Image: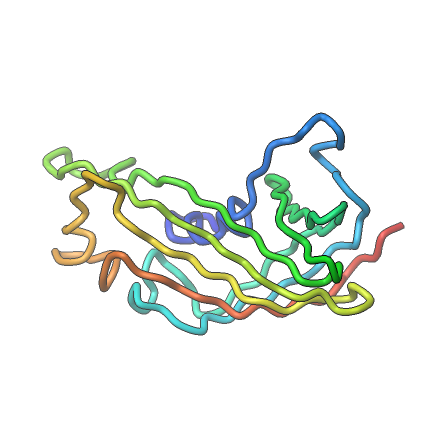
Length: 181
């Protein structure tokens, strides 16, 4: 959901947090009953990764489209639709996803050892009774994959993180900006 590597890594939720596969029963581009489009404000609550790690901002905003089905809340970032769990109350929701990022891709010197980071994303929240908004928390964890040597990302001339593994959490507040037609 961001552009530079840090923002791309973070917004993965806002983009990758939520990567799902269709089951052939619903339109994968617009599954479920549309709840609306939401403007989401995210404010960093904690970080053990270091201030500004991966270019992470203290606050950021993004737009998401939500819809729901039986026990499922669909999070559509515009890049992909991710299915999450919707509680029996039709209000509580959660999403879990992960992806592996090659930290040596791009303009990295070839003398560095292989380093991949597993980014885990977890979002939990509560829809308003009328689905006019929602609140919640988004957490990102960053862990070197087995066999990776990512020491230079913590110590070195330009460290990316204060520590690995590490976690960033954001508080989410969202308001519906477009209701279903």
